[in-house]
Length: 114
Length: 111
Image (cartoon, rainbow over all chains, first blue to last red; front, side):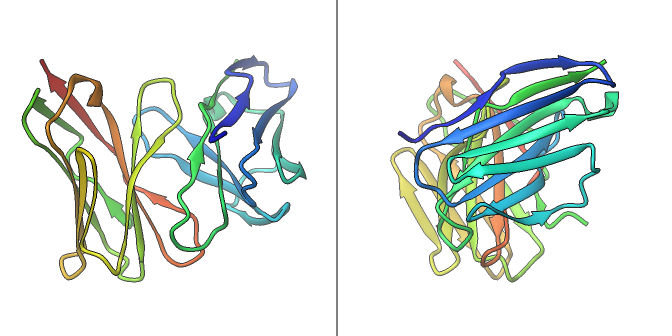
């Protein structure tokens, strides 16, 4: 199993809603990532979890709240988002954060904030 | 300041010919480089990588070349196929740091 599974694939939410994005991998990877990708731009790193602990937060606004319940799951809780937060949210995982460890990406969740 | 640059936003190549995608970087501490391929509405898919101790890595139709003195790497696809049409991202990392991505090059392979 070399898959990173993200749900839902598409999400439309209002600015007052609370929703969560989910990511799951069963490759035994110990590093998991959230990226945000806008159209025609490269993926931008948001958060890194290493061994289920948050190791990097790239100055992401608090309306995005990550959670790593266990080594296979990564969530991104969304609250009071703005229309400019509409983007493709990608989850990725890798064996570790060291050299020679490529990241595997999920298919992404296309988020639209209305 | 962009640490990983892909200066060609798009590239068109005829089927059967060679596609060459280029990537430049500014951080001399980068020691691992990767290429990802991305179809519309999908996440990036890992394609091929190269460590800074090598200057070439080959996997089937895909070869990555690294020129450390020029801080330049390239991806060669031979022969190019219509299914190769996608956006290609170059990425780099230094030690344990997460990947830094270039802006991507859209490759169109014309039948």
